[in-house]
Length: 158
Image 1 (cartoon, helix red, strand yellow):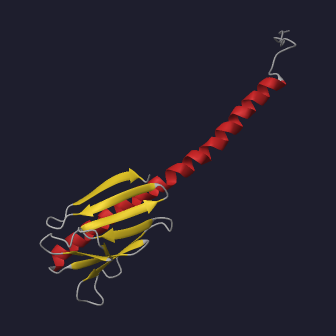
Image 2: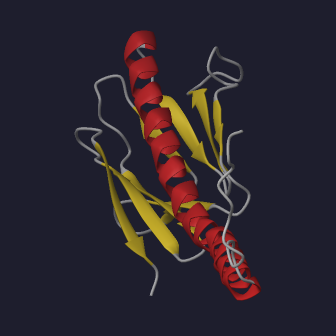
Image 3: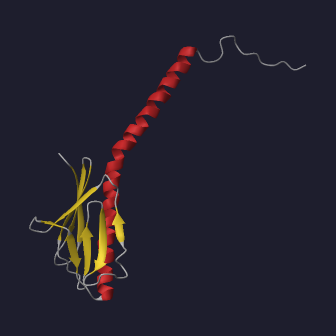
């Protein structure tokens, strides 16, 4: 006959030990959604900057290929591209929709609020700055008038 090893009578976890482990798990689970909700507005702004940059680069490429200016209409939650002088064009349906909590506005180089930027076939633009705000997160996309270069600057609102 083989003898089975017997467990000591006090083997296992006490109720206190189990409750401490459960408390740690509950606290960890409660902290995760809070940290995620703080990161989301910042991520939405970053995605908006990427989309706006892509839309501007697309407009620049399309302007070069078609040989005519392309307008970028800045709306509160979207960017719309259209060929200048045409009611309907192949890119009229191209738009960049952003999150409903993300606010977008544009200003010219002299600070006046504008609703349109124009990209020309030679690479120049009407120039300006597009501001993206979501909660305390803020980013600006600057478009150079002469070269059409697109840059961004992230910051937190104070």
